[in-house]
Length: 334
View (cartoon, rainbow, N blue to C red):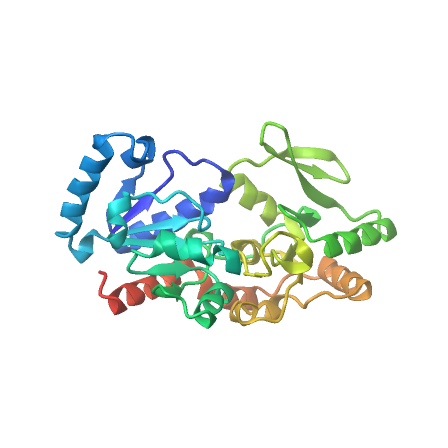
C-alpha cells in the first residue's frame, strides 16, 4: 500500500492536521508516500483527443496486473474533493472521507464516484450508520478521527494566560451565553478569531486588542495552550454549520483536551459523542445558569489531568492506525 498526499498544492490550514495524520501513518507503517501533483488526466479534456484514451488503455492494462500492495490510501475532505488517482486506477483506491455531510439526493453521486473502490472509509459513526441503514452498495468502514501522537498531553500543568477562547466556527447559543457572562463579569478576558481579507487568522483579546496572527499549526496549538476555557460544539449543533443533520465529533475536541483546556460544550447524545466520552469532559450546556456556574467553576480550578490523559489516550492517531491495519487485512488489501 502507498499513501498519496496533496500537500504539494493544498496549503489551507484545515489540511495541516491531515498532513500530520499522513506523517504518523508513514512513520508507523513505513509505506511509500507519494506527492500528488494533480494527475495528468485532470489536465486533459475528456473526449478531446486520443491522448486521454491512450493513457486510459495503458493504465487499464496495468490495473489488471496490480498487486494488493499497490493500493493507494488517501484523505478526502468530502465526497466532492479531488480524487488523486487516475480514473482507471480507482479499483486500487482506498479513500478516507473526513466530512460526510451527504443527504439522500447525493447518494447516487457518491455511489458513482466511489463504485470501483475496494473499500471506502468514513470518519463518523453517524455517516457509517446512515449508509448501512440505506443498504450501502459499497464496502464501507468507519475509523473515527484522531489527534497526532505528537500532541500527547503533558503530565505537568500548562501555564494559562487567557480566560476563555473561541476559535473557528462558533456556536450561536454558547456565544449568546458568553456575551451575557462577559457583561456580568467584565474582568474576564476573552480571545477570539478574525479572518482578514488576505486569509490570515488574527487573534484579538477583549482586554488588549490584537494579540497576533496564528497561521501555522504550531501557532494555533500554542494559543489553545494559553487558554483556561474553550467553547466547543459539534458542527451541526444549533445549525452552527450546514451538515445535513450530521454531528460528528471533530479533532478540535481532542486538541482542547491535549492543551488542557476546560471545555464548555453543546453536543447531542449520540453513539459518537459517547465514544469520545464527551460527557466525562464537559456537560452539555443547555441553559445560561448552567453556563454561568460552569464558567465560575472552571475559572477557579485546573483540569483533571489524569482524566484528560485517560480519555485522550484512546484517540491518538497510533490507535487509529491499528484499526486501519485490521480493516486492510480483513479486506485482504495489504
